[in-house]
Image 1 (cartoon, helix red, strand yellow):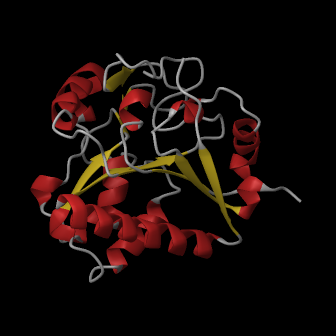
Image 2 (tube, rainbow, N blue to C red):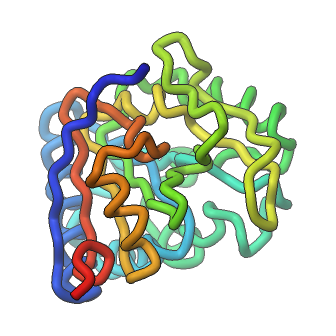
Length: 235
């Protein structure tokens, strides 16, 4: 059983407020990490929700020491490397392709090698990082996060693999690669992102203590959950 999750809820009235505050927080955490450790290791979320965040980061070109950023992903679909549905391609097109971050410091998950091959290769990459400075995560309508789905192994045990080969994900792409709940929890900061009424049910179940995959992310610092009002409070 994973530890009890400490949650801090941050609710914003509009999508614009949400995006501005999240980007401001990311840039602040980057400055603090670089000041203390000389580098900033960030794990990116997949899906549609973070794309506006990435576009705002692209616009903040003069506001960060990009040369000291190291970018990772929480999960990836097992599709060709240039497939537009891949999380890495979404982030590249919105931000990273035109970013000053050195290419050698951008670490997409090699999911084109399949679930097992991609997981084995990415485990070697993340083994070089003790703790991530910031992990961004989304929230699915079923309560999943990264590619950790209800009813599957989330890798929450302390001795779990750091990277999981996922072969039975629901939806159009069953094969994926995902960091485990245990590895995602090894982060100095974890921020969940949720927008839209479609996330309302999952948020309420999470608030009520249901054992959703999102609840298995248990860093020592707790988690910050950033939402738009329609995802949190239905009036």
